[in-house]
Image 1 (cartoon, one colour):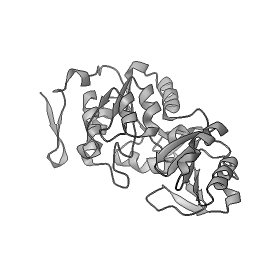
Image 2 (cartoon, helix red, strand yellow; image 1 turned 180 degrees about the vertical axis):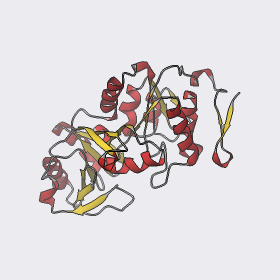
Image 3 (cartoon, helix red, strand yellow; image 1 turned 90 degrees about the vertical axis):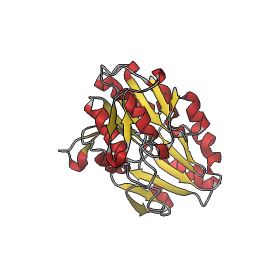
Image 4 (tube, helix red, strand yellow; image 1 turned 30 degrees about the vertical axis):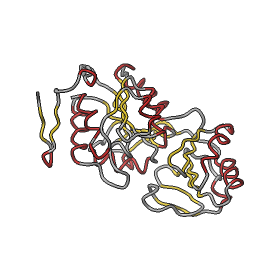
Length: 283
């Protein structure tokens, strides 16, 4: 047995693992990690033991890719906490793919940006729910909104605009929030966009036929990582496609049953550092 003691006395057992948790580590893996509910509790920093686990995995030459529903503005600070200044990130549930670069303006280069026409989506939502709260992502900046969200609910600056300006430009992601807003999931999908439940009163809207998995597959092919060396950890409904795509899919212990059902393994919840339990199998 090999043990590694990390800050605050937390001990990572590296090779005393059940057979089902062992993987071949003789070639680089693409390691896709959700952020909120996986790496951290929303609104908090990444715990130091998790930071170290990610750094150790990167030290073994695995490609760690942060894949989140967050905007790019929300992902960049997490990447910085993890010490990741190069590599790929997937933002906005797959609508935005960027490469981190410490010599680039803002610390990144946009590689792929997919957009949709927000106007009809906003009109549909407001016609059904006049009090719906709408946020339209502005990449690298924040959101234009019809009403301000709480600061911890979205990342970046918020710019309140008239409803007529919400759909003035194509966007990669829009947020619809309000009581009963989930009733719009099917109508939005029939309209031709991807609508993903992100909470009991929250829908993320992105371009059609898109998910974290679609962007991760493009990254995998670019890096030349074999499909059987793909690994993903997540906890949310928006992680289902990513976990289905991965050759090895790990669900956090607090994930909904629908997420656990498609994962190959389930680890501890966020309070138990479940993501570390998954990552240590790559060491």
